[in-house]
Image 1 (tube, helix red, strand yellow):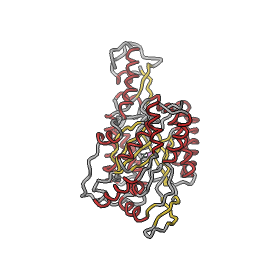
Image 2 (cartoon, helix red, strand yellow; image 1 turned 180 degrees about the vertical axis):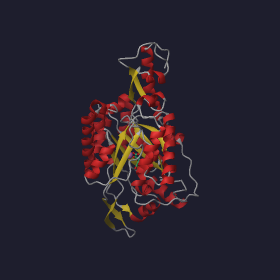
Image 3 (spheres, helix red, strand yellow; image 1 turned 30 degrees about the horizontal axis):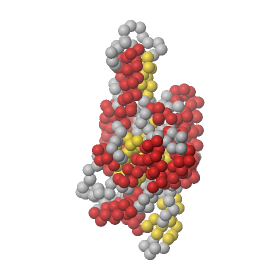
Image 4 (tube, rainbow, N blue to C red; image 1 turned 90 degrees about the vertical axis):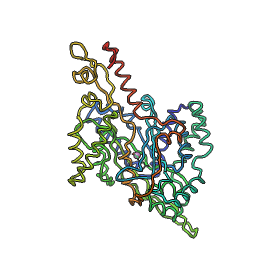
Amino acid sequence: MVAQWQLRARLASSLSSLYGREVPAYRTLVQVAEAVNHRVLGRDGSAAERLGSMERVTAERHGAIRVGTPRELSQVARIFAAVGMYPTGFYDLRDAAPNPIPVVSTAFRPLRREELARNPFRMFTSLLITDDRRFFDAETQQRLDDFLSRREIFAPELLRLADRSIAGDGLNAADADRFVALATATFALSDEPVDRAWYAHLERISGVAADIGGVDSTHLNHLTPRVLDIDDLYASMQAAGITMIEEIQGPPAWPGPDVLLRQTSFRALAEPRRFREADGRQVDGELRVRFGEVEARGVALTPTGRRRYDAMLGEVARRVAETHASRAEVAAAVWHEQLPDTDAELAAQGLAYYTAALSPSPPAGEPPSDLATLVRQGWLDLEPVVYEDFLPQSAAGIFASNLTGAGELDASGAGSPRDEGWLAEVVGGTLHDPHDGYAAQRDAALDRVARELNLPAI
Ligand code: OOG
Ligand code: NI
């Protein structure tokens, strides 16, 4: 039998080979990322691995795919459940300022720490919202819905194998090979001709809408390796002659611990695609929709910490608009003012998630029973809980920085209500809350420490 986690590792590696063949710059990115990680290991020693073992970080990827209908998303959910990846988090990118994108998204990923350690593959998956009048008028919506309801992206055999893996907790060797091959082929760039006029109509509204609803298939949009020092990576890629987008998305470089998620990307080259013209003729052309992205992960924030982060984002935007200073400078100042820059204070103030073990050399005397005092008096060794999710603002920024045009938006058009409950139904009933896993890790560790210190609770 091939267990679900082994299928996940095989799928991740197979998609990585596919994307490397399709987008050569991705291979450069992976090489540079590995070089950066070795540099950090040489520089920081074992501290380099406090956010994940070198083995995990080197293998770690997230992909991004985009689908057009709730039915397609429900099929995606079956394919990923077959490899132990479950829909986690809700991101509505339609209200992301200043870059609204006509999708709602979730991330399929392993939930438990042990599963993430075995293979942390995740897939950021976006669903086009066709009835949102800020983006699509009634006629375009009708055409989109007709077009999307006619296509079959996922082969029935692939879905049958997925269901078999879900029911049997894995697949036999022959089925496993077939499943990985079919799933990989599903996410390859198709050579089916693209209807030029229809694609162009959608592209005027939104490049993302065209990439989803203007073609007969889906494809990996990017595949993202993880690095331990994204500032080094950014400089190294520029030095290798690959132009990166202007900014690193997410938290700024700062003296404190790595927090949440920092990402950056480069625009991939145009890729050859076939087009069907209005008169039925087929011609060669190109499209430039896929890109390369890379990320660094840090400690997960608690809901309180996350509210602080969101407020800081707002404050940075306000000051940038007011002073026209560079975003990096303003962000560094805001972070310095508003967030403690040590693990101890992030933990003591309940802003970030940590697991804890009893320090081998605790202070003398009676232990206090609250976390803040235990941390400040040096009773505990803290380990960051790594952020395993995404950031809506950064995601929208990544989408937008790689589009050719801003698109057209009808600000007076009515949005269409979509929420977590709706998305949960689409993906089969459950949408997981990212915080559950982080809190469970912290709580289990603190319970252990409380028992060791003979405290009723911490
Ligand atoms: C997804 C963009 C978001 C991320 O890492 O935040 C994303 C897409 O382009 O389909 O991948
Ligand atoms: Ni991404």
